[in-house]
Length: 470
Image 1 (cartoon, one colour):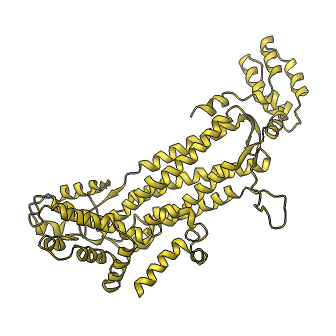
Image 2: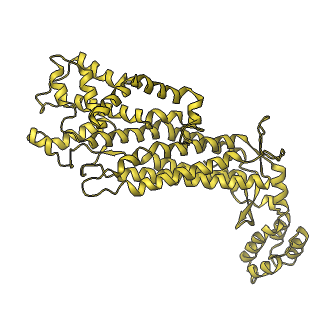
Image 3: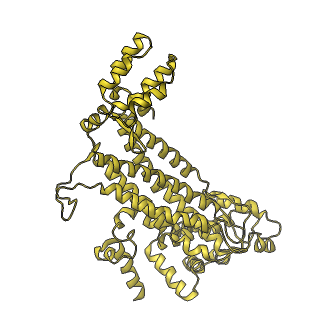
């Protein structure tokens, strides 16, 4: 009866709308559909599934080691049995483990008993059952399970979404590489740029952050209760346990950490969190800038017919996707920051403060995923208003003061900066005012003609080329 009720709860969280309305976390409530790809990775079901995988693979690896004579090489039938425990793992199996845990009051021991149960009774399974969880501490299983979880989330979900978002921006950058736009340093008119060049800046930053995140080495340990192979050596003193451990860890696609206490020290986990924070920060910067450009009228947003912008002001089309992204990025970054600061700290050979923190990694990564989806949605609705952008830049003749004074420097005109400062600072600079000044300059006639032909819209340097240089 209890098992049936638990199964209904699991099914409810996947299929019943009412369950999302009662969720404690927005990640499993309002945004449940947006983090569905992470649920089987970071949920308790996902953790149990990865624990089972690690336990089974360890048992299989022991059978492959000639120095462990008591575990015979596996028959093809037994290989299939063990592989099926991993490949066929489902909610029902996870529920069975939870039932066992209700008796053992130990989550990892429950996994061991489950595997022993699945092996059944037979001449080939007797020794295997006794070598399930051989010489392991729970953290041998847990640290590798979390390593596999974080690797799967990165490889299968987060990096592909990062790439998708970056490619959207790259396409926009190239399309609008030559559209002149007024820069605003300190919020004030500054030398013109192009829409595409400003987007290209973001693309490059995101690309670097993505590559650094993807490059964080995922490490694990499998060396017993305090990291010294104590139990391993007492049972098999002649076996090369560091080498056996290394082969096993690397077979899972994880790098070995050779020196640990009972726990893997989580330094790589902090690096993973910090790398994701860097990405979050860059995406937050982009969202705030786009929010501002929408406010200036540079960008408009495609209107969804039945969407409401304000409950009382019918005219409003708010930049809600970028605001949603910014808020979720903040939530993710706050959690990741705590992980990075807390997880590498453990009293003496271990304390349990990391356990509950690890369980929240899915929430942190989930908020980044929600944010990336919101930002992507916002980007897909953006429309460039070239008329508004052109009007803004063409009315900013004061930005050509930089151009004029730089040419003056080339030809030795005294105090070029000071003269342009006196002419333009705090003044309403017009085309006529600037041209009158240029006409008085002692510079070659060809240079004078070039300055007189220059407009704010044309003063973009290599922005157009840079916008396409991706």
